[in-house]
Image 1 (cartoon, one colour):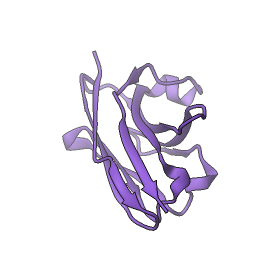
Image 2 (cartoon, one colour):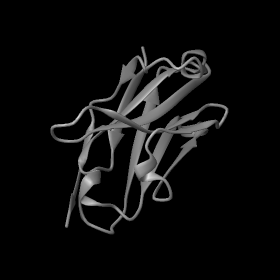
Image 3 (tube, helix red, strand yellow):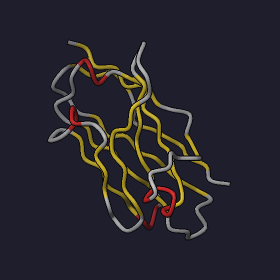
Image 4 (cartoon, one colour):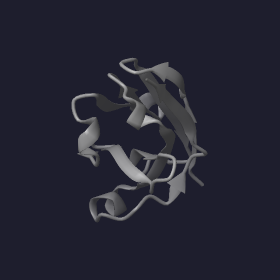
Length: 123
């Protein structure tokens, strides 16, 4: 069973930065993809960024281009979301999610989710 634990959320003023971490376990050496998704108050969940174990990346949100980057430490089974130049509209619960690489490449949605971490950006 894949387990995902997010950390690094918090409150920051507009223009600030945060780095979220997603520690994964149970991947068992399989090819996988891990992505970040977010749900803002009153809005539907949206994808942010995703990275596969082959370092293929997908940017789901135009609004974060040039501000957010995703990276991974394979040795630690950890994926990071570096968020710079944060805006109040980035306020959301951020979720880490994982799925088998073959499902990722086929366009399927993740089947393993973390509990989420709150990011609040004040103006």
